[in-house]
Image (cartoon, rainbow, N blue to C red):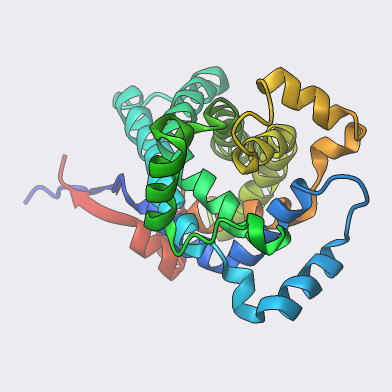
Length: 299
């Protein structure tokens, strides 16, 4: 009898990255809301603690979840597209078993991020507006009931093109986020595995994700501030990206890093929960069993 060896192949389903990101958003949404409120502050800035207290005082604990429907819609568009394109293209490029160079990985991640950023811009804009509404005077609040209502209101009142306000910055942010979160993940994980101290397991995955998340947040924060302000602005408030940049620069260099801490924590959490490369073997936590199928095939 001739024995046949089985080779385990890990196949990713294109939509799992988006679903995992949506699940992570349910946990991190309060921090994302506070990040947006910090980024839209001008003049004297309230601290993270004070902003949290203001939300709790005015609307209670559920106030921290303003815009959650738009946040979920954003993840189901932006994150689903960027993860799906990155993973599927990567599998095609690596079908002969070759490894990707960092430049190739970054190029794939950049294209995937660009597509995801564009698709997710309408939901992102509604999310920003819903999260920041509480800081506006009552007469200036937009009062979107949910993501769909917000999209409809923008379309009816401001026009369809307004749905892509801030799209250039959303796309730029997505490109940097993907390169930081995915390409640097691959690079860092490869480096760790080349040392005698790490194996392909949960610890290596989490360590790589945390490092990549920090890089991604640092790369994207200046663009994220501009994106948030563009999406939250009134029609005609800024003449263009350069005008917005100059307006923000007047507040000093640190203005481009407003909301860094509440941006950093969700990026780390999303990276660990929705990262594209789960560990192998029997150490997979439940989330990875949801995100990936292990398919055994006979060569």
